[in-house]
Image (cartoon, rainbow, N blue to C red; front, top):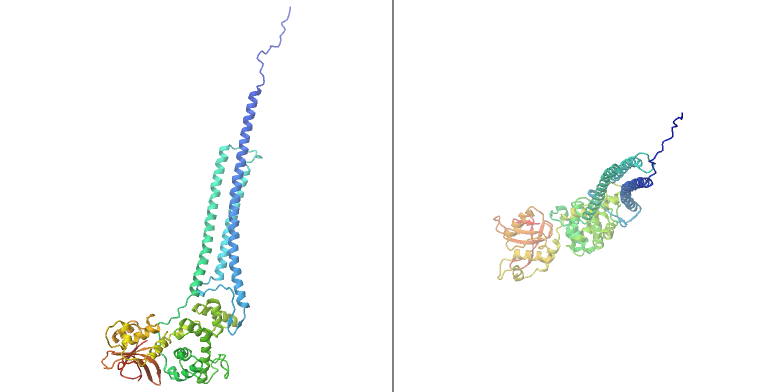
Length: 504
């Protein structure tokens, strides 16, 4: 019996390797990997750009701010050093390219230091905070590079990067605002300093609008003043000398000109009130004032600009005059204050002169007073008055005493600065002075250049007017137009019932 032998079944369907399919799969995988690698590289570039942008901006802002503050501090130290190192000669301080400011416009060094610290601290904190945030997200990003085993889809990575960039933009915007704020603050400080310094240093309000009368003591010294004024070549400045004496002492004491410490004092100790002879005090004080007027190049008794410079020199010493001319082109109240402060620091004293000396003296000295008197004196003896009333605008003869006063004021420049009104009726002149609070009754002791009003009828109404030439020995000396149809010099007792009042 033949046994059935089992044989291995022949496999008819032989599966062969599909090389084409494998190749396509490989290419697909490579394409995906390449795409992911490109995306990762793009993400890293965008991240690094944002990081570098913030770091660069923060660094530049810090550096710029610190440089500006350092420059400010260095300039301030330089200025202080220059002030300390410069010596004075006869009260003259040499300053070079020093930026000056008045007390009300100074920036407190403490304030500026706090501003610097605040800016630096703010920027530093902002930079540290941003760096920490970026390092955190940089670590997160590293999880998505080619070396990691973590697998995220391309869409998720792109969404993450978009969010990160949006987050990074916010600190950048904040930094931009901070930069704008810091820049604005610096510009504002500079503008405030400039305006403050400029306005302060250019302040030259030396015109006196309120004139006060002289004391009887000062008036009593008028003959002595006139004597030494002529000897010193300043005979036209008697009223100015009177004003100086009024401010210095009111004409009281043994040193009425307060000239003891002056260089012209060669007889008495050069200490406060060292002079014990009033006559010698006046002589020395007038010599000193004459020297100041010469150094200040005063051209006339109405040259207020240079008179102001001379007066401050009288108070500080001639050295101030050359200092003010060199650094500021003349006198201002502000630079007078600066000079005083510098001298106090140099001499280690709490007081140095009077920074407001000019204004204090000029309240006793009417600008142009001497000029109007000189003009009036030049007309003494003129008859008819036709040159005056035709100038005023009349085509026929009128009473011209008030017109004469107006004409003299015009010739001396006092009409233009409204020191004296233009008037043809005495009552109009009276009303103008009263309206402008510049009227004094007959008890007032007048000074050179004041306008004197008369009441011949003694009925309480003015009917004549003239110009005060001087006051001496209880008498007021005048120059009047239309006095018997002539310009004449006259005099009256100060107590005369005919005197109605004064325009000052």
